[in-house]
Image (tube, rainbow, N blue to C red):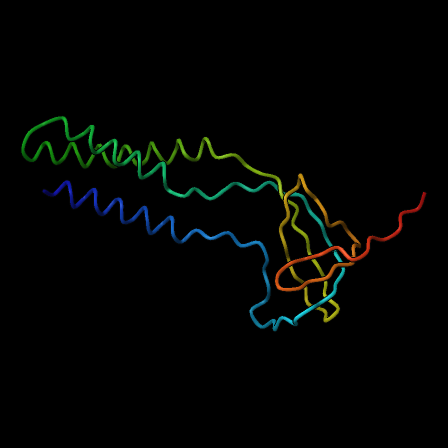
Length: 154
């Protein structure tokens, strides 16, 4: 009966961990009051490698499989001990596997100085880089749109 409590606690912890992971693509200062439509200029565009946050699936599956495997050994209190050790070992191994298979991705972190003098930071995929240094942009409802690109000399 105790194993069901332990496995239930592992499942609950994993679910709570997964639900708290929300990606943030745009960062604004906390005292910033957004205007309906704003304009600004890209002042910085930097390519960075981002490691994805593990979501806990590897930990959950590893813990469950390890607990089931550990439950096959021992008897009485020994069976409970093997189950707990198996669940913990499986969770650690599952977490390592998840970290190993999750791939880094390249993104461009773009800083935009609005006409009001506020710096906004946004993230865009590196393979679809739309905004470049010096670009004039329009910001409306969280969407950034290219308005004008500076002329390049030939």
